[in-house]
Image 1 (cartoon, rainbow, N blue to C red):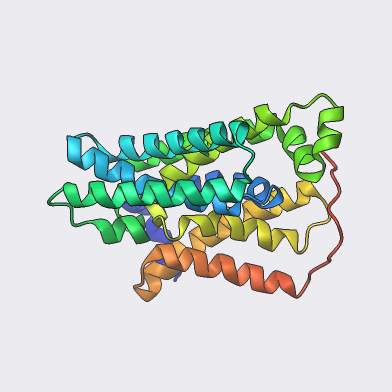
Image 2: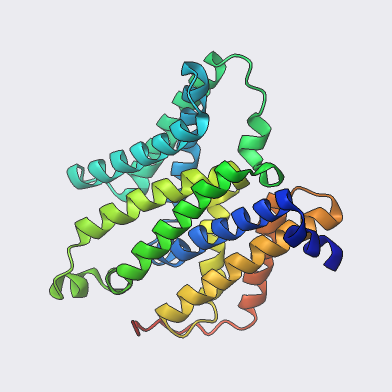
Length: 275
């Protein structure tokens, strides 16, 4: 086990994979608390499924699928934000429409893009094939996510606890909803390439769900979720190598194990905002 872990620090291509996974864990973990606190678990799932249309479009027009995948995720996120402001429908209804529509378009474009046979990797991830391009994208997503969450931590915390209170303190919910939706669209789109669209939502939800069971405050929940995300990603990567199984589902299994363990120590009290 330790020999496997040591290889990720000594072998160049494995070091790239480890660095990419760490960036992935930071990007997803930093947003997990906000996603769970704002009841947006379904949002990341909708964005993940929308990236199928981006991948297929890139292959169809001969453009790098990574670029079109990220663009599709951000565009769908912007459309959801616009529809939320102009429509009286609830967010979960809009997400259902966006998920169904983008997935249907993706399937049509996929069938038009002849010669693409890597759908399994797209659905379930390709952690062991991450390269320097993926590392750069994940590092950028992690830096942006950490920067914005750190800069607006008080605003996000207040909006999660009480939107009227946040408005009373001069915080504009629409502005921060827009920032969050676009940021989620970008981060989820980048992470899909590593862990797949069927598993990326777990990284956005499970770490914060586990931390919520034992945290005393919103800040404690944030740091707990970040730790669970980092440990789960690294442990899942190493255990996947050790047992010769795909790392992506292994990462999710470790995260879910943290959640189940946290149930034993559940406090059940409401979180306080100590930011």
